[in-house]
Length: 463
Ligand SMILES: NC(=O)C1=CN([C@@H]2O[C@H](COP(=O)(O)OP(=O)(O)OC[C@H]3O[C@@H](n4cnc5c(N)ncnc54)[C@H](OP(=O)(O)O)[C@@H]3O)[C@@H](O)[C@H]2O)[C@@H](O)CC1
Ligand SMILES: Nc1ncnc2c1ncn2[C@@H]1O[C@H](COP(=O)(O)OP(=O)(O)O)[C@@H](O)[C@H]1O
Ligand SMILES: [K+]
Image 1 (cartoon, rainbow, N blue to C red):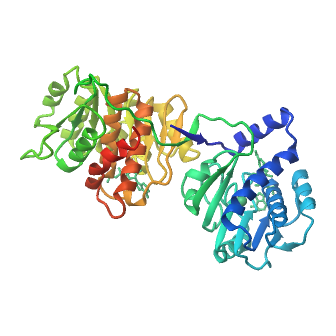
Image 2: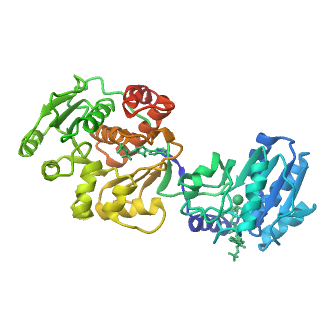
Image 3: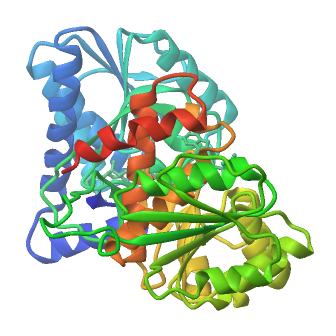
């Protein structure tokens, strides 16, 4: 499930330093990075006229290398700079370009725009006039590329420090950075391409990629494939969505304990009406149960609280979502049992853990460490984090997922995959991926129920 390491600016600098210590030449690395980026730009734009914007640091240095390589291939290239080059490699690359250098504020637009103003070294937002000019030039280009990161985004957090235009493509040099996957920065590029620059990078934080799933063993039966119990409350829809998602996740069987009358739902889910919260403990006293999911449709009143307590006392692996998270938020993160999966959206996360510092990745990791649980910190950029420091960041999920009930489907998938795999981090990664893939297959304007029908096809694609 490792779709490529994600490095902070400091980690990237350390990887770069390790390469230098091993004998790689400073300027040779810039030539490699520039050549890799030029190749990607060449494939997209061929001989269309190009304007390369070069900043004062090494990102600008990459820009001069790109400009020289494209010019040598016959592209009509113009270079516009923002001040002098301040690094030795940048100065060398600028000298090797050797051509005219325009003032960025006065340069005319071109068909292709390459933004090599600032990369991982950006320390503050661009001046308003510079940011505005960048937006005009990028907006006027038919093809636009951001080198390493779009200028104006904070590489480590994905925050926008000044106005940032939308680029056709962002070329990540050597490794992904948080800004490539975290919002709002991730939304500023249509396409993300990773360019290999030949230096070794590794991290416990990576981009989520498609999982490899397996078909049940030839001698499988319903209890060996995982039994999920869903504890609902008075609102039937949410726990039903979660139950059906769990049933379609690859688990062997699903039981649902709720209060709705008459009992509704698919025949394959065993629905039991349990009115008094005391009955929940009894229903969960079955050793064959692998995972208990509680939260969707639970309710936040005394009854919901009592059901949550019974679910948490039952001693099974837990997935906690929705109302369960809000109720726990009132008690504080310490009440969370180790080994659980929690699926908070932003509001639930804040209620549980308060205002943690750092990027969404940092916050998810801190919450996982503090609670001992795997975190699925949801949103357009979902972060899955484990207490041991591993994290996976999902990106590119359909924005149509921002509709009621999709979180219930995800919670059911987490419970189902946990029942199948017994591994909370792996299960959470698989669930988030299947959820995104189901949304992709469902197309536009779906409702949460529509995700359920396409789950088997999403699973089939990964067997
Ligand atoms: N690491 C690697 O493996 C490789 C890295 N490579 C490349 O290097 C890039 C990182 O280069 P970098 O560190 O020189 O930083 P970069 O983003 O060019 O700018 C820093 C300069 O801008 C300045 N400055 C900052 N903010 C400002 C503002 N708002 N307005 C105005 N000025 C501002 C800041 O000076 P300051 O004023 O903060 O002192 C400094 O002078 C990386 O993204 C990649 O493209 C590849 O070549 C090879 C492999
Ligand atoms: N703009 C978006 N792009 C991609 N995925 C999104 C977006 N907005 C929400 N999602 C996903 O949709 C789901 C919504 O869950 P949640 O907020 O709990 O909704 P609900 O409680 O209505 O089910 C989460 O998995 C979240 O990651
Ligand atoms: K850039």
